[in-house]
Length: 117
Image 1 (tube, helix red, strand yellow):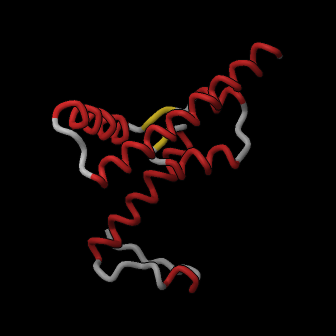
Image 2 (cartoon, rainbow, N blue to C red):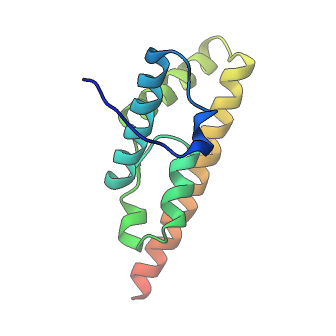
């Protein structure tokens, strides 16, 4: 599919030069945007964006990792147990764990709100 877009000049410097890279950027952005609508978490930015919108307690409880994030987490966990992680993978693992921690706290507080209501 061919797509023609006008974007603000401030983003022009960030556009990739290869068409295949542009397709990857667009795909990632669409997955993230769609995930916010369905409560799927792809990465830390999704949690931040969702919580910045001040969701209801029910919306917080509906947050869940995307299939891709679930698969990546399982892969990293298994690799960590079997052979250890490379430096970049360790950083990714730590970010996933931070996100998981934040979501658990948000869900616990959402449950308290709902029980108090």
